[in-house]
Image (cartoon, rainbow, N blue to C red; front, top):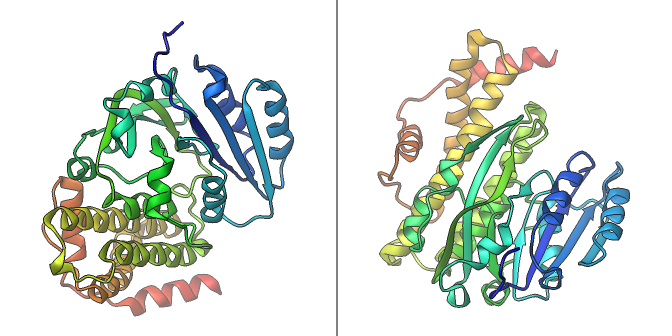
Length: 351
């Protein structure tokens, strides 16, 4: 049994929508934590699930009767509004998010407590495993940890989970999600608070497992949903830049703020390129036209991204890291592609 000299009073925030297949794994990972239950609160929002999610939640509430366990039922409003509701119901000093299809590692909360200078930090970050099917891998994109906010942002993807947030800090930032903008809402959250973070606490232990399932946004290949999701990303991208600039011009920012914006730009571009360029071309079209269509997709999306960057007079500069260099190259492509070929192809498929 661990010796708990220091314990964070922590709320675990869980958004749920049709999560019946994964909830038992998640709550089992909480039940296995050797951590005093009096310091933990569980807050769940069931966002209008149509499966047995609600029944499973109430069974776990009864089973974990030594915990403070709140279940909020609401009509389906999307993940952005669900996260907003969760934060509104926090009354502890700290909180953390976990998605319903992921789970905590052993002693996750205890390891968060071991973060250096935890009382004086705004957030605490840990390391993440990525699981696909039954294989688990060290996810290097989320495991480059640093107490320096600029260094931390260089190779991290701004996920909202596997971080512990000081509630007073988030209240001071006065952040709000955009209702209906459900794509990359976690990147919007973290990038919106990034420039306000003064100090990061880190634990070099693995505290979280991100499960990439066939039902996750990054795995869904239904092309009919791509355009609306892309629109939602642009809404969050625009709002993120507006929050950080705060009516200032890009050239007026400090070097630290510029580096944060540069990182944010590449996060959005990389997600757009992967989810809305490569995936639809590779999964929805014949192999004979995949390569060609990937460029057509990207050229169209690139123009819309550039419209937002031009709106704020943000300069695209050579980035740090090979994956950012790749997106930089793609964003700066000079060649124009004939979109009419793509439109003709789509029209034929609709007949």
